[in-house]
Image (cartoon, rainbow over all chains, first blue to last red; front, side):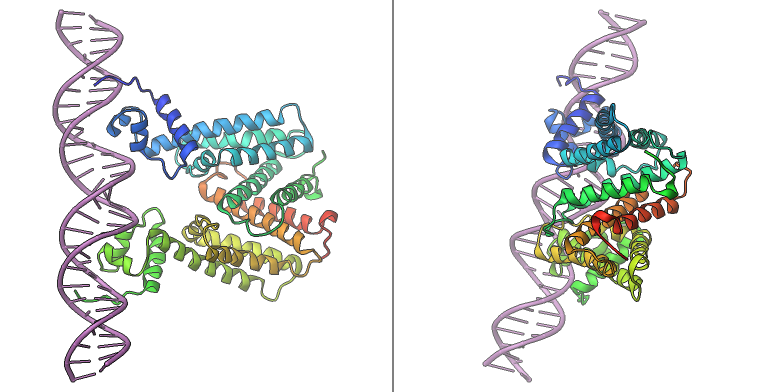
Length: 193
Length: 193
DNA sequence: TCTAAAATACTAACAGTGTTAGTTTTGGAA
DNA sequence: TTCCAAAACTAACACTGTTAGTATTTTAGA
């Protein structure tokens, strides 16, 4: 049959497009194959398994997220950088909910590549905290705290857990971030902006 | 054929047992039917769909979680109550990771029953903040903040996002909670223990 | 108590999923 | 031009949830 000229890259990219358009739930290898005008089995020439593809999409998503965050903090320092990073993180989750779902469904434990991908998520946050006089250990704790806040907020908002209460979502997020800034300069973590 | 005497309740409970034992991923209606010594189609006499069962398991999980939290804050007030609640929330997520996954995979938007279930998650947190002089609106914001922190921490830890950094997990959590306590008594939220 | 109705379990099948083995076609390099 | 490896194919398997239609068993009413 006429060769489609598929590549691993093309497979991943159209998969991303389909997931962003129709959602992760409605995505399947068969639909992907149909879109690429190929039989399902042919995908296995470019991808080892559905899991493999899933992981690859995760790498792609993490790269885009890191990009957005680095761009957001560019030229900023201190609280301004931290807030800019936080909002960039939040915005990515809101604007690419399906890609964000892919990221958080990655089992980061499995292999080394995933570990370094996890590092890519951390890097912009660490950089945003550059200006603070904190030990590396403190920064690592704080980075976990900020990610918890942002990730928890995003996923609960997406799941609808924050509905039905007639108070502004953005105010809640602002309050959470204010708490993080308090932590950044609180005595026990020994920071100065 | 000999009737098994199944009830909706029994179906849900063995489903919970199977999920806690083998994980949510390995769970299926066919396995459930086999465990109950029944053909798959027979389950539909007690359950409308896999989704329906999933929702019912969610109710069960939320009830157990609420229980644990109310027990934890019993007789406590102020910071002590808040910290006890937070640790109970965290502990539930650690000890029942699969049930916790069921809870967070519930689309809380869908129907009214799920909305009230979402209320069950909120109630213990609101009660833990009883002693603080806060407006209802402030408490609602703060409740969202605390849930974000705890949920975000739990899911990222479970996904392995916190590995590979040689700093204590519990210290990170403690720092996050310290930040929340700071927020509780910060001027802008106008609280006093 | 006997009968009608409702509940329960069944068989058989469908459409969907990912995946594999084995086969054919194709494009490019020797 | 031949030959080989890559890429596409067909056909099938095992699994998923789900439905329609059919027995059987229990329950409720006359």
